[in-house]
Image (cartoon, rainbow, N blue to C red):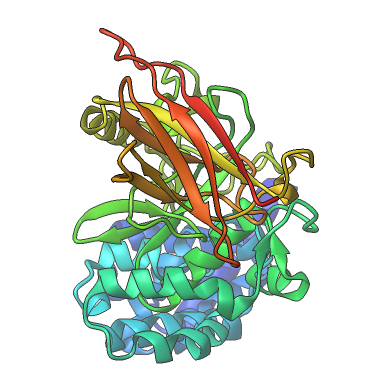
Length: 405
């Protein structure tokens, strides 16, 4: 029966094509072959996919062909032409509008701007919504880094979504997260990635199914700038490629794929992006980016080799709880005995990822002080004693707590 069904689908596809002219004209042979195979495999829904291909404007046809050719099974069998035409149309509008999008290679635009989804989240038309919120912020910006920074800093206030473990499911779509005002790290990454893509900025999700320290999984966002990928998160750090999780990512165990770092792709890669909430789902292509994070961590550690790691957290009170909800986001500065500032940073608050904490690399063998000023002007402080430099290894982090009360 399966052979007959496949034969029937192929025959139907051939009939459709013969009645409407050659839909593959002008396409690269490999893309045309993959497109034909996926439309044939879609069965009755192949008509919808063919309609989307036929109705796509001439300048959008190749992008539509790429999207359909590598569409996962669940989408291939259900998505309608109107949905595809709308989302592809918005993507090309961004390409025509923003200078950074105009300069993109087709391969990057197709794989990391055009897709309407990143993982197995609910399929929904999100580009029009994001365009309305974000276009006024970036319409006069010509530098992609400035656009990324602006979107990254403002998105959380525009969508009113916070990190919360009480979210309904880890892989929420933008609409689902905005409806309840909360999301997991995966849901936040979907929000940020879709926002970037709407503004013509290549973006993809990266993550690991398990840290080598076995402290759970994590997902974040990457953006493409001038031929290189950089990472960021929904709650941005002062600079790209800096975050609390880099140390863990940089210590990944290359001998075991469960500890690797992965990035998503639309086009098949021969590897699957792991989703801990759907471990058997192999429909999301993945890219092994472990070496990138290891190399980046080692490079940053080389810069910080003359410093002792110090982890700083701020809680509501000394005698209170130590849960995520008890944390306080505060601007911290570290000073020496003469009051000279040695370093500064911001602690993670209650909405940040549970594994997020401020780590500073401070001079070895020093008596220092961490301090912050609360809303009333009161200064809160805690002493820091950094260890002496070890000859061949980095010392264990010094842990410091400060309190509002």
